[in-house]
Image (tube, rainbow, N blue to C red; front, side, top):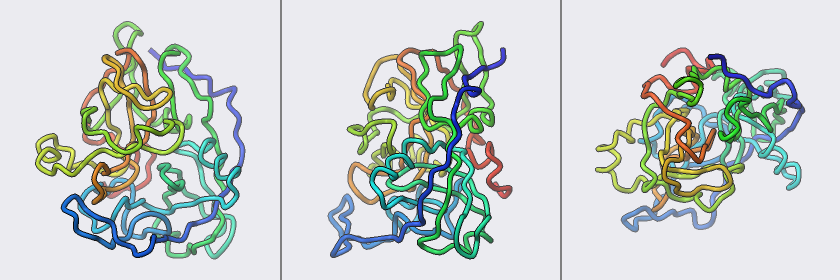
Length: 289
């Protein structure tokens, strides 16, 4: 059965931001789960050696954001940048040495995350302007009104091999792994339209037991019994599909960031485990995976 959406009525528009300078709060130390102070790089800037498709664990970093992180200094424009931008949107460099180069939106954290090819990254500078062609706000499945879509561009939805099954009653989604609701941490209090939720990764033995320590940036994952339609909470039978957008953290209650993509309050979403369920593959971001 074909999967239909309301793409034809969506509006495309430009939003813009600038490449952010990394910053540290004085004195720079972050306490890990053992009470040891760490000073590690983390969010913002241009990250040269961490991209979508790379491991979410193992970096000497805290909340590392793959690729390029952008923001807008005006608070109202910053809100628009966050709420209108969707995963898979096209991004264009509009100033600096890389002017005219194109990339793709891969996540939303404290900043919007954009992947550019390595040769473009070499030319980018903090402060360069990036314009995003925002497309996807208001996207909905025509035949599954109970599924709420978040941050999904039509391009992303078309790229994922979704299947309508069970006589048209369920949507089947490929994911790399299941995340138990009990390990979901910081971000439960946030609006699921805005920013991600971290999983709690401090119990390394549990991460290895569940296979979560093999998670990659850009992986699609499923959280059973999680209702993320208007917040983030537990609901028996609900299903949430999400995206890993940033790396692990040393902070208690924090870990790789999980961005909500779709959520339903009833079991109308089923999933199949596929190790290649990563947006680096689906959006043709890189060829070396």
